[in-house]
Length: 233
Image (cartoon, rainbow, N blue to C red):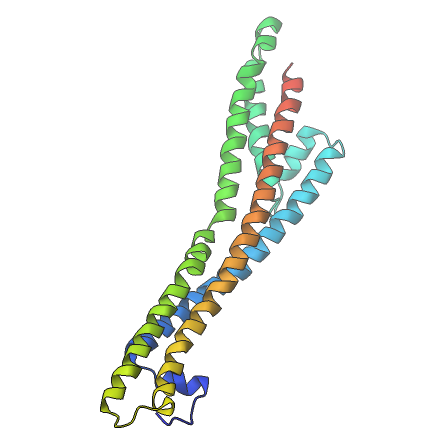
């Protein structure tokens, strides 16, 4: 390699085969991370917007059966909170339909917990499904953020080893002789950091946003269970 040609492109194309493989792997990790980052950004923003809209409609005093019909027949995506509500309301309606016909009043009044248990379980299951969907692919961001710098460092160490081994064939060791090899090795570390930093930042931010959504879902589930308990009584 010409010692004067230290452009990034030249350093990458003239790097040793193993260092090039490391750089390619890091670029694939970076591309995958950015794809997940953008997809998750849109998914979380959509979940927050849909949750805000449904909460506003629910707490304005909408009639539960009417709201259930609107959610269950919606052609678009009603949002995660609406699906949790739908799951709980569906089981509650089924329990009331089973217990109402021909049952004595005392039996119906004593079966409030029987009607609420399926509803509570359905909402918990729906909440877990929504959380699994929101948290999908976050593990890759965490892995990319923690592993990428070490992969880049491996490429750097290997490149520096090759650079110093090349000095054995040089009569006089100078900085100009070893600089290109060291420079191309350090590019691997730079690419590793480029892949790791956005992944770590996105993971921390999205984890915070998802935790806040989870708290809102759990709070709504508890409050809606209280409302259904009053209806059951």
